[in-house]
Image (cartoon, rainbow, N blue to C red; front, side, top):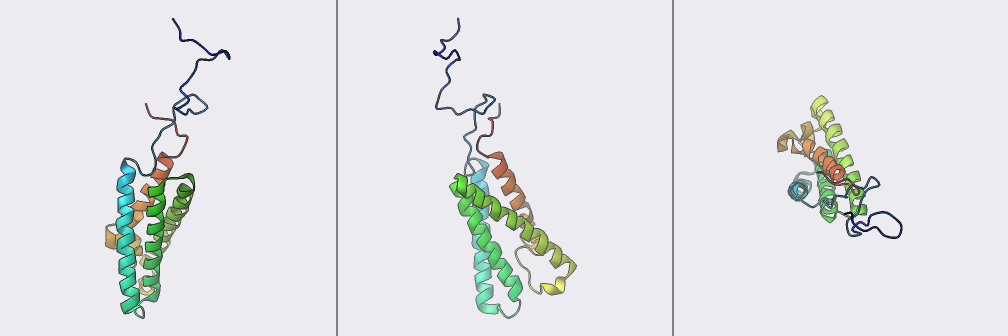
Length: 161
């Protein structure tokens, strides 16, 4: 025996469960669910660490290495934006998080490369110097994980079986 079909001739589906065009259920994961909670926490820790360190350096030793300290402050601001946007998880915040994390990745790769090729240009380390070696290379891995998580939790993604 088959289930009844509506007047249109197709079986009814639960309107509360969105589906993709192929009929697969859509995942309900957001950027702040599951492993996303850990990612948001790590971004939060880095936001606090980078902003605090940069603030102290800018206030007490700005003349020693202004570029390095300003870059650390910029990194901190980017971490703050990424933290808040990943925690929100809305469509707009996902876009802002993507831009912030791409800027972060470009910054880590650019500053990391310049600091390795010309160490004299960075007399004091930044968060991104030597690809974040002073922080266990987490600054290099974090944006890769962040972009992967944004991709893995994108809206309309079919659920895994």
